Amino acid sequence: MIFLIILSFFLDGVLSIYAEGTLFLPLLTIMSLVITGPYIESKKKYYIMAGVMGLMYDIIYTETPFINMIFFIIIAFAIKYFIKYINNHAINNAILGLLIIVIYRLGTYMFLNMLGYIVFDPNELWVTIYSSLITNVIYIVLTSLIISKTKNKKRRKRYSTNVRKNY
Image 1: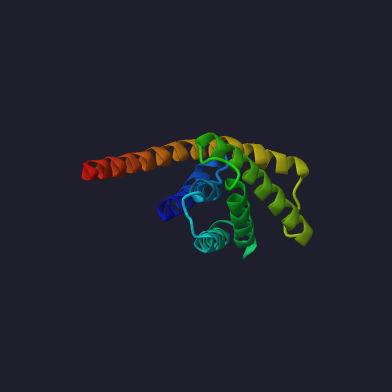
Image 2 (image 1 turned 120 degrees about the vertical axis):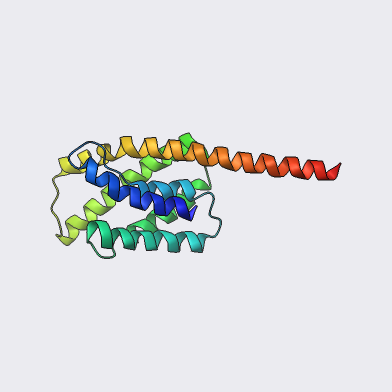
């Protein structure tokens, strides 16, 4: 699962180069936190990983020290909270991903406005929100389906091996 988060982090950088000025803004690192949330049982490890990825996001992509680190940790808490109440399914992950995108975009918008770091036009906020939805929903659904298929194959293989041993 850590591999998926790191891969998503690098894909964010690559896709951001090609997506500039389009309606396809990637937030794949955050989406990977949604996807991996149910699979990483240690909350402490998950929160630390989210914080480290947020700090790397700050340093490499946004040059806003510690802002994304804090928001990634808050998002990780929200993800762990919500996954207690929903099944781990591609559609549920997509809905949770949409919610997380809105929380992230609104949160960073309000925080950066309060600091006076960047003054956004509220219309630009809505553009960044809906521009983030298409790419990230496709990514989260496809990745969730692939992971669930591989997890089910491993589970079936383990089950069939155990059944044969019992006979």
